[in-house]
Length: 357
Image 1: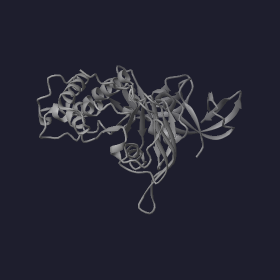
Image 2: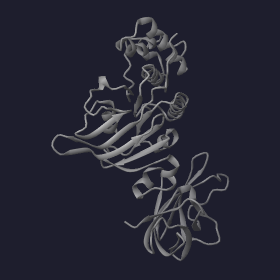
Image 3: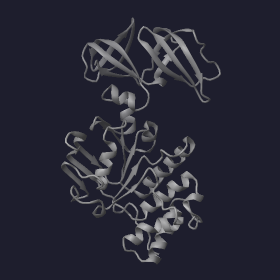
Image 4: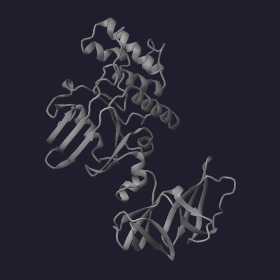
């Protein structure tokens, strides 16, 4: 049997000043530079219309760049059609042939690429085994669950041994529990095989869970690139802070900066944190819901205005002169009562300063 050589041909992807314009003046991607390392899973994340799907489709060759260069490995593929690029895509809709059984669906791309029937069958069975679908070859797609159909679509892409594997919103048709399971499967397969994977989603939690690196896009441009933890803990601006997980944005004043440590003041309450190059004056404090504290000796006067039990934690809306913030706490046995007066403060690690907008 000719074993699948997954990951051995993984290639980097490079965008050099790439712009995509639709029609006369609709700029979908605006002069972006991007390097995707071979063997990594990189997610393009952003709201609808930010350019992430267009970027993915330009890697696939389903859209051609208006200007700039796209390289896969050492090859300039900017003007190559999709059929001449060594990439495969897993679509949001799965795109399985309903009249073909599972094995025939997985074999389809292999036979289309010139493999003889016996080798195509062997490789398709290997792909199904890799995805935990042994024994499913004779079933029709309609006889499978949504998660199983997604795995068939992934197997069909993997057996072609692409230099780059692309995912376009692959979990959007699945329910919440199944989304978690399938995203873990995709991540495990990528890590086991060493494939270069480019993954598009608008779901922040999904991006944080599967990615080596996340490219946050906004208004056809790249807002920030980093690891999940870098983006979560050190966002460049309020857009990234609010888009990568929930964030509370609170106006504050930097009263002093010494040795790269800023002292901030909010309603008489003082807190110290890294200055991130900012100088004394107005600023914005970004605080994750889990990094807000109550019950300390000092803090900002506030009131609990909403309390919600969600099983594993409590969720609170807290209001003060600063506006409203969202806080989560693990203690579900002693919930805070709506109407309670509290002192709101911040954990020592986690809050981040941003320039005042």
